Length: 200
Image 1: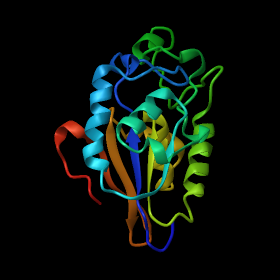
Image 2: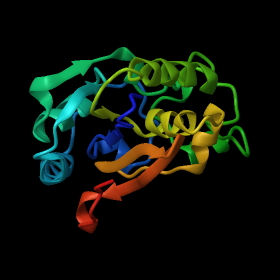
Image 3: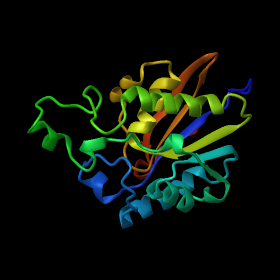
């Protein structure tokens, strides 16, 4: 980032039917539930009054809708690099369901037939981070759970599969920034309903 050491705000989309059921939701374009819409509206309170130099959003409707309801849709730039992990044959399935066939299966560690590797998702997040290098001012990213977890790991210089150590709730806010010259997490997985202050 620039000498101003701007921060990057990561906003996960609101609730969908599949997020409630813990189904792997990659490229399936699901809308927000009514609860998800309310979550997105609550985000507006935390985001209003902040001037973002750039707002980037995944092309999937759940992220676009969250961005719009949260009040940043008009300034948002759509980028396919923020689309969720392509889960291939595991799309729409839960981890316990897959483990009936493959005991011990984890999306982070096993092959994803017909989908992306974690390294490929990491390469996309690297491009997003690189695109922010010369931005002067804070940035907001509206995207998805696994994608943003991987982006957080890559921000810290960790391998993309270290995203497994972070969790993200629906409509949560996380802030990436700096501790002097070191990339750092300012806050992580702050949920609108907890009423916490996410100011860096």
